[in-house]
Length: 273
Ligand SMILES: Nc1ncnc2c1ncn2[C@@H]1O[C@H](COP(=O)(O)OP(=O)(O)OP(=O)(O)O)[C@@H](O)[C@H]1O
Ligand SMILES: [Mg+2]
Image 1: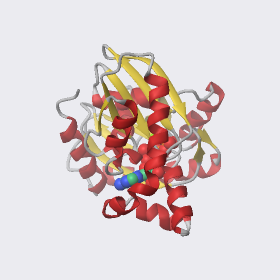
Image 2 (image 1 turned 45 degrees about the vertical axis):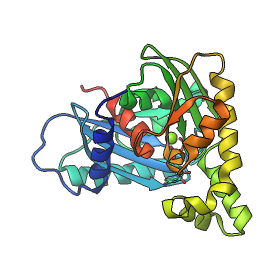
Image 3 (image 1 turned 90 degrees about the vertical axis):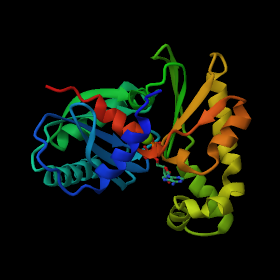
C-alpha cells in the first residue's frame, strides 16, 4: 500500500480549504468525479501533490449514468471557474471516471460533460482503478462505496483483474434513516454525514452495511483476497469496516479519509500533454 497515503489524504483536505496557491507554475493534473452524490474536482501538481479541490452535492448522476446532462455541464463549468480563480490560471484538460459495468455508450456521456464544460477529456478510467492509483494496493480488493453504487476491484500483483459494480450505496443508508425516523431525506442525509450521530444511527443502517458486505463477498469469493480496502464517502460511516469484515470473514480497512481517494486517483490519471 502507498506509504504516503495518510499524508496525501491530509493534503487533499488542505487542498479543499486552500483559497489560492503561491507561486506553483508547473504543470497540473486535473480530475473530475461525477458521482451520484458528490461532484468533485481536484487539481494536483505534476508529481501528484494535491493543490486545490472542491466538491458539491448534486443529483446529476444515477447508478453511474448522467441523468441531467445540462445540469452536469453547468456545474462542472462553475466548479472549473472557481478552481481557476483559486489557481490563478486556466485548466484545459481533465481525467474522469465511470463505475465498472456501465455500458460504453453511457460512459461517453461522462466525457461529453467535460468537453461541454471546456475541458479536454484526457483519460477515462474505471473508478476502483482510479482509487488504486492512490492506494497502490498490490493484492486485495478495493471497494468504493459511494452514494449510489458500490464498485469492486480485485487487484493481483498491482493489476486490476476483476471489476464489478452494484447499485447499493450511501443513498440507501439515507433512505433507511429517513424512513425509520420519519424525517425528510435532506435531514436524514445531514445527520448521516455527522460522525457524532453515527453511534445512534448504527443499528438502523447495519442491515444495509450487511447487504454491501454480501455484495462484496459474492464478487470476490472466486479470488484469493487477503484484505479489503474501503473507499468512497459511505466508508466514512464509523464501524462499517467491522460489519464488512464480519460478513466477508476478510480483514477490512478504511485507509484514512475515504471520501477523496477516488477523486484524487482520477486526477492522477490526467495525462500531461
Ligand atoms: N462522514 C460520512 N459518513 C457517512 N457517509 C458519508 C459521510 N460523508 C459522506 N458520506 C456519504 O458518502 C456518499 C458520497 O460518497 P462519494 O462521493 O464517494 O459518492 P459518489 O461518488 O457521489 O457516488 P457514486 O460513486 O456511487 O456515483 C453520500 O451518500 C454521502 O452521504
Ligand atoms: Mg464515486
